[in-house]
Length: 286
Image 1 (cartoon, rainbow, N blue to C red):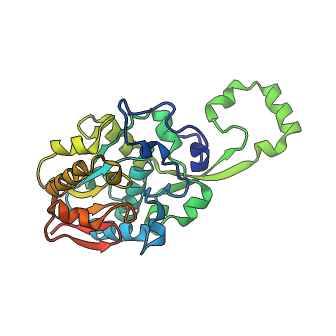
Image 2 (cartoon, rainbow, N blue to C red):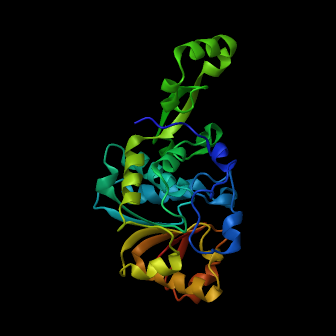
């Protein structure tokens, strides 16, 4: 499989939601989110707190280093897919030769409509500078590759006749230089695409406060909801959603959220018992 390279900065310089908007009105702040800083785990300023991304990798290392049965993971708010790509990249780096399908049972919920395969492919490339900041396990899940600067879309190369190609090589040789880049490995891409294509696993045009009602008690080992809960209006609905997150988490399960946008007291208000914060924005159910 070859994927046309597009960087995170390229993606965010365009209208992210031009082709895919919710079919209902979300909280106004939802449309303002436009960060090129948090293309990994979408946790924004969490980098300023504690171990940042490493806290999540340490969590997954404890869960996945030893072979075990599949772990159920729910990601609410896929964030143009960088959120699930991030989780899967770290997990794959930990499990090594073991397969994702034997270790991860992934579910997703998002306000957006289901992305096309082309849109998903665009998200498979981190910015070169961002790659260097990725935590150690995630870096193992990216493949180093190269492409001709001019032929950003390899499908278009065949459309240029040989004469034009030769003239371009004479007039603009710098455009044909090889450019190094990174892309997510094929297993991760195929696994996420398969999840998205499974209507039982992925809910599109859906709000977490409604989708969470459909999951049974004690289902998930990990639930991630970054940049989600503060935007649920009114506050009573946010608290009710947190109650159900606690309900569908397994005992000793983990809840991941952005520590700068989540109020710990919300857990208490929602009636969570015996929970503890094991790292900034990461809570374990008692």
